Image (cartoon, rainbow, N blue to C red):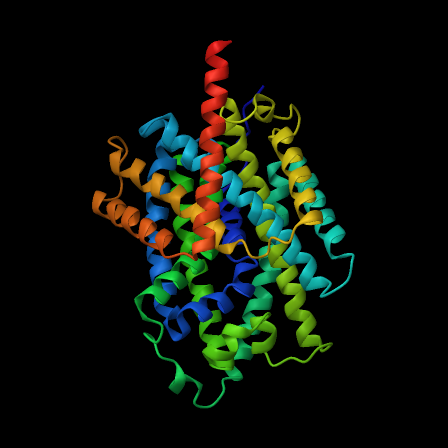
Length: 414
């Protein structure tokens, strides 16, 4: 039996999407965005939210028509063809696997600022969360609900504290266009990393109750809530630090609340960041596992990854494989700088989603001009990402394309 069970309600789906978006990004993404755009990061945030809205509406429309695991990988195959689906799925799996390693390392870094046990702790966190996923999607949803609740409490406290700690006159030095259009666009590409989590709802379409109604609603509700959270936090950290100090900060929320090392405020933010990292990692495990399952079903990844546990009805082989790969990565490499690379893969993933929704004939719920705008903005943000991120992304895609060509030729000969 290789089918998943429909157990996720609307609230479960919203929580999983929100847990993906209000993760470690809200604790870390402000510094690189401020370094790229200064005060223009607010324009970048608005642009990232617009791109996310375009992508979310396309994903919602497609998910209602194709309520199965795999997200845009499935939509691309069904509407555009096999290669389009592969390009979307490959970018998602590789980019999000790197993101999972980064989230595990971020979790350990928040709890243990230094020491040799950081990496083993990160690997242990990955193994524990995969074990939770292994025992059923309802366990995943329940733990995600708890994590999101803790993170939101910490963020509410941080927002109130940072708003009260505004530096007098700090807003006089905030210039929206100080970095020019390129800096604003680059900040938007980096900030988009924070909004990409709603894809997790679509990738789990095979496990959602009444998916044609639930998935579109869950995607839009989760995105709206995440935008509100990011705006409130962004205003707070800039008001407390100013753009210059924010750009050079390694722990923006810790610095913004004005906490000293060892204070309870510092540890409250650190615990919040660690828990948020766990929430993002938990959602990543679920999303990567389901996309890997869909790709394996069609032979785009090794067939054993398509196995579904007969009792717990989860893609257990795909998730165990992910746990091994990420554990090795966190023990051997420091991947906390993969925001740009992850954004590269996810923006191209959503370019395919927008194109598929644009070409979709049956079940249309949103206008084609919105999907055309989404395609254009995705490409615009891709080309303005840091050059290193683009280069690594192109190289990874090349490896995937060559690998698929070799596998297809080998299968044809045999």
